[in-house]
Image 1 (cartoon, helix red, strand yellow):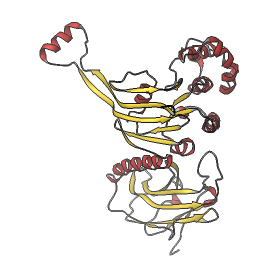
Image 2 (spheres, rainbow, N blue to C red; image 1 turned 45 degrees about the vertical axis):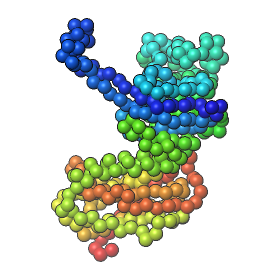
Image 3 (cartoon, rainbow, N blue to C red; image 1 turned 90 degrees about the vertical axis):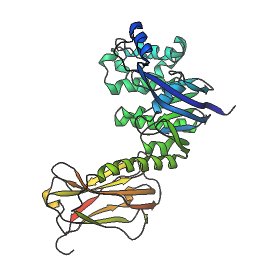
Image 4 (cartoon, rainbow, N blue to C red; image 1 turned 180 degrees about the horizontal axis):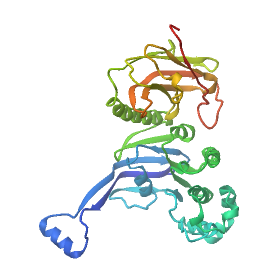
Length: 387
């Protein structure tokens, strides 16, 4: 077990949700003789087993309500397992929810020491870390302000800065990048790069599949409280994208208009270099209202969508006339991309037609961008006559 940081064995967590307004002794007695429990059971985690090795950057992904946060709180010993066990080998620093362990009536400085104490560090240890925490948070001018006067972005900066400077063996992060401006998110990315090169263990819950691909050494997909798959970051990111797109597609298919026909003209090859241009054409028939085309590029997660000038009437789709989207591929990092094409109504943005995975292609070349897979500068053109 010397190389194991976290071991989860047949973990099940069940909550009892009250169904009666009163929970007093009288009500409980009445419920007992009536054979009523007075509560319902909710089990967000069901018989989960896995291990995380020391030094791993381990990602956990899944839809909202899949059990990710309950799992993290069980590992952090905030929740006690209903069944099974969780073993943590080393000191653990959790960053699970914004504001947990903070007091809005205390100053930023006081909250740093309070949060540090909750993480198990002495005042002397926190004094040694204090300057580094403030420097990373970039909140030196606000340390004597009460936390209730901080914006949510400022609070997450402070909380995250305490968590990463606490120097624990295991760092747990739950959607830390969901709050905060672009500059701070980039600072987090830079820190993740540093951690990835070190021996610190990280457990990272996120909906950002690009972050999973970029930082994680292994990842896990949870669905309905059970482990669906554990594998490489690429495998898990692709699985996440596939499942979520299937859910969206099913809902969109129910609203499609069968009287409208959309024909897509796609390239005859599926491998490109960064020097080439991607050209996609669309012809629609059966139109009786203003429609426009939406093209989405997917790389492990939703990345970019472009619409053919929704607010410019001359660019709306017209019956039998081809409209095309051209994209120079020097704006992409190498990799595999999927394209989804949909036809929308101008009046309410409703979907008329949707083609999931209309085209998949591979780009070969060198990485150009650190903070994302692409920089798109597409151009729409409406063809006149028989062009």
